[in-house]
Amino acid sequence: MIYDLAKEVALELAEQGCPYRVVYGPDRFTDVSAADTHIVFSRIGSSELVVANTSFKQNPKLRAIRRIGATVRVIASSTLPGALQEDHERLADQILDLLIIAIKKVTAVWRVEFNAVSGQFLDAESAYLPGLETWPGVVYDLQIQIDRGVFDRTWQGEARPETTDYTFAHSGTCAPLHE
Image 1 (tube, rainbow, N blue to C red):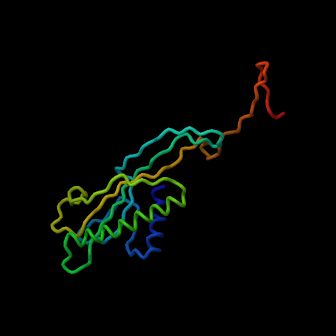
Image 2: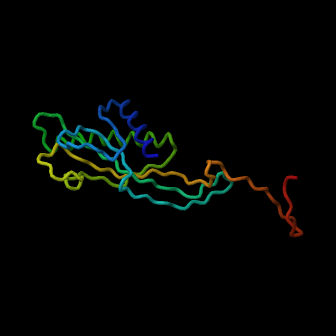
Image 3: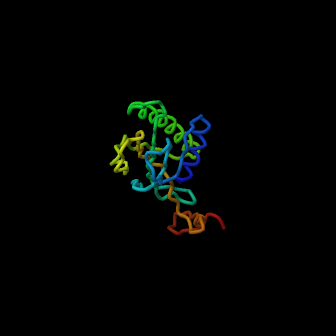
């Protein structure tokens, strides 16, 4: 689901004129000082939550909702000559604004709930980029959750068989409604 979200968000961002690539991670670049500005979606290290649900007269029955967690990492490196920390942060903020709107648009089409749980700028050590001699920009991690319905289905994805409706007569016996 998060992989599909990353693909759809990439299309939406491109439509909005955002020139940066979107990848499904975790990010695997080796030379951090050469890292370009980009967005990484990943489920690694993200927490999930399962919420019980009760549904009636639905087949398949919605039994629970999984709030699938993901981290959306924005690596922003301003191309301004002599760019300072605030220039990198300004670029990250601009990307984040477009990113949040793109996620909201995609999840609205999917008719699922999107929650931005938390977000923060990271230093090199917190971003798991230790040993950098120079900082090439900023890294911002946005923690999100997307709701996914857990339906009562077979392994093949089929709904469970329907049951027969019964009515109870005043005599206390049970008889099928349709014969």
